[in-house]
Length: 137
Image (cartoon, rainbow, N blue to C red; front, side, top):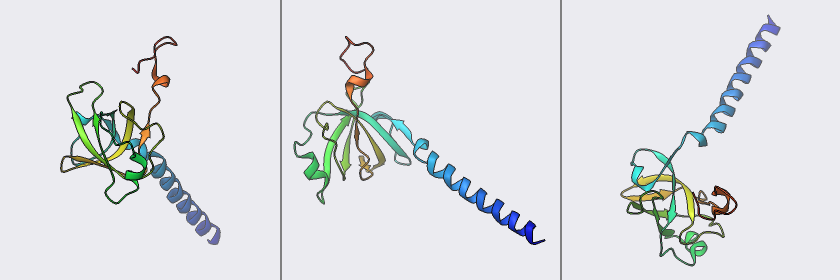
């Protein structure tokens, strides 16, 4: 009887730990990638777009301030679609106008409010069709 109880406890613990592992490993992949034109207020998204002209030059300092870093992201396919972004956290060195970024957050009152430290810049050289092609795809 005692060995059966140990087995049941061990099995229950294994199921709980396995469930936690699955939840934590899949949690980030369940967020939808979207451009500025595809955002709705009810969900968490990974916003994918290009930093519009006029991004602040002191982005790292502003992102650490209480006001946060404010900039605009435009849709890669439709440059007329854009969304304002509020971000706080670390800013990659490559952050500048025209750079493609991915940011995780939610749309609140027309502004995309990003999670802290979720800003990632993408390197355009990694997304070329051939060695001679230098434009991002």
